[in-house]
Image (cartoon, rainbow, N blue to C red; front, top):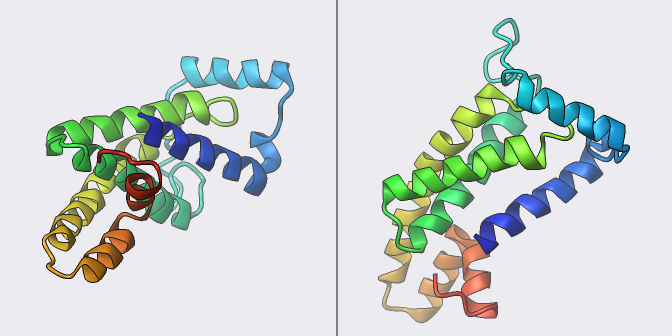
Length: 166
């Protein structure tokens, strides 16, 4: 949970910096209005927009950004001994939390993000998990450490710098 919270908070700060409108708007009346829309209107999905841009976001954000966020959530649960179903559920929970709580005061949730982030993340995350397990089985401590850090950089940092158990 600490990893997921730090991930979502870090991404939210990046979002405020990169997209100050609407994410840096701290006026209470705007925040309450956007949260009202978030919880009373359906998620955004505009089928008239191009493929994977149904929410109006750039293709790279939707495909790469959300895929990586989902994989980070999935991988952390997976390396903490959740099975694939539990890891997928964790990624779904993180995605819903992101869309409704962290981003909901700026924009309404995206139907694409709610579906693709955990599913794309599970596919990418499972590949990363298998690569991580393969790296852990290497005999060379240097090769094991380098490959583990390449596949799971945040996890390796947490395991070594903060003594995280997984």
